[in-house]
Amino acid sequence: MSHPVPFVGIELGGTKCVLTLARGPNDILAQETVPTQAPDTTLSAIEAVLARWWAETGFAAIGIASFGPVCLDTANPQFGHILTTSKPGWSGTDVARRLAAQYAVPMAFDTDVNGAALAEMRWGTGQGLSDFAYVTVGTGVGVGLVVNGRPTRGIGHCEMGHIRVPRLPEDSAPSGCPFHDDCIEGLASGTGIRAALGDQPVETVGTDHPVWDRVASAIALLCHTLVATTGPQRIAIGGGVLQRQPHLLERIDPLLRASIAGYLVVPPAPYVVAPALEDLAGPLGPIAMAMDALDSAIA
Image (cartoon, rainbow, N blue to C red; front, side, top):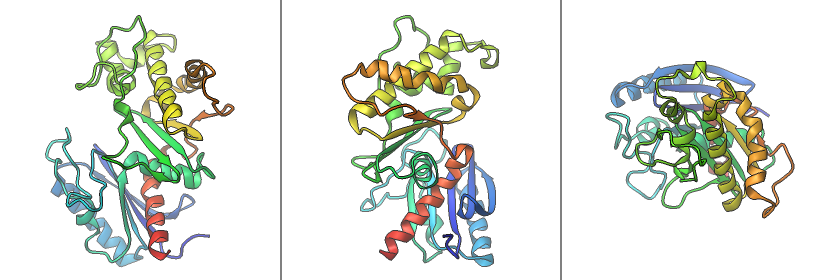
């Protein structure tokens, strides 16, 4: 059943912020986009939309899903802040408390990929599961990792895009990551693909080009690591690279099984799948977070 009062979701991205007023995926009342510019300019524009929606309909809770790295420790004075980031001017920006301060409603703050994972678990391919991974392969590589029904915490949020993996023996092309020569993001992200191709445009590359062997291998090894550590019941992989190169998805599940080599029992195919919510997983992530925050406040 839909909640009578809608929820606000804010997906804070590196290039744009998507604001959603909704009761669920089939009841989206409004959606607006704010370009990600300087912090004060961006947050002021978001605040104006929130004030208007509050006056027009009100909202029951706020979910904020942000690019990272971010502080998720509620006991830390930096909770809700963006930490050291390559996004100019955003390091140390207080996002969560500033946006939620005016409204006496529950607020949830998490990473954008954790939000997408929670949306897929509520409405998509993760329904009915307690352990689930949402992988996005785009400009970078992010993993939303939910274990025992909750996104992982510890010393920080999941950054599995930067785990280091063996390259294919024939792969000596440059990495797209300035920190690691052999991490998933450096090998498989859009940035990594462009680094490997050099001056050759991605649009001119056929599906049989060796760069896709590199990408598929790296993502399969990421899935191997997931299976061998938290053991998600399903892995969904989305993002711009997979959307533009749909041939990649069908390669990953068999590569994962070959890598595991029978040591662990991988659930029957389809185990590695596309996100059911497609492009809506990101914007609906903070809506799912807001719903969870309200449920926790009522409990």
